[in-house]
Image 1 (tube, each protein chain N blue to C red):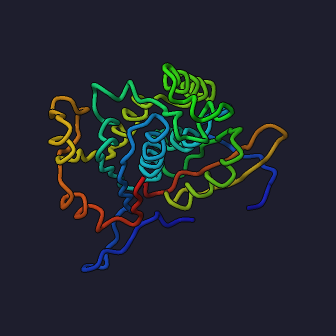
Image 2 (image 1 turned 180 degrees about the horizontal axis):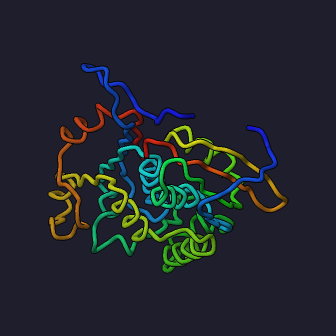
Image 3 (image 1 turned 90 degrees about the horizontal axis):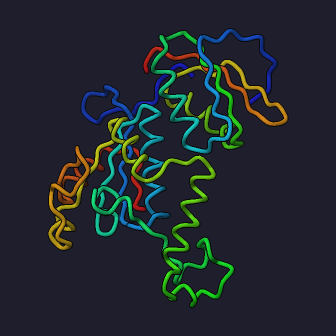
Length: 170
Length: 85
């Protein structure tokens, strides 16, 4: 257990830190946690970590929206209100109730909130890529993003991911 | 992994009781950054996942897991900071 985890580079044979490349595509409260947990953990292990936030996933690094991520109970048989007929998830207030319940779960388990996780990840140097196409399609301005996010397209992310040891789409 | 009884010295102690993944690894990593190579962090957890996570962390970072102990309620780890962190 004396060697730090590194991967050999193609040309020189020298080693570099391991790298994690994630695509975060979901903008729900429950969908925001997995990429943030994995990226934070990777950085804690001494890896480089980068997350490409695309489509609804961009909400996770949108200052106007990251405090307001929700859990959708409709068509979600595993959600916090799974014991109710799923169709009731369409009722007014059902999304708010499921969201409140999940927030309580997280808080009771001492898990950080999404904004706290975003800060933790940034503090460890996790790289945030904001999908420029999503910004254009959904009308997100550069000022809406959390500080330190790089606006980038697919080619830039693939260039980063090509040198990654672990790549996941979430 | 073997359970061993330890009379380990520790240069710092971190109690992560009640915390779930990824917090024990995250906090242990921050604590280890404050130490010098060769110094030992004593980590206390209650998340059963830590029994797999902490050895995995040590494999990835080059830290040395000097010892693991399980009590009825806790997992105890002694982690020596490696030279590469």
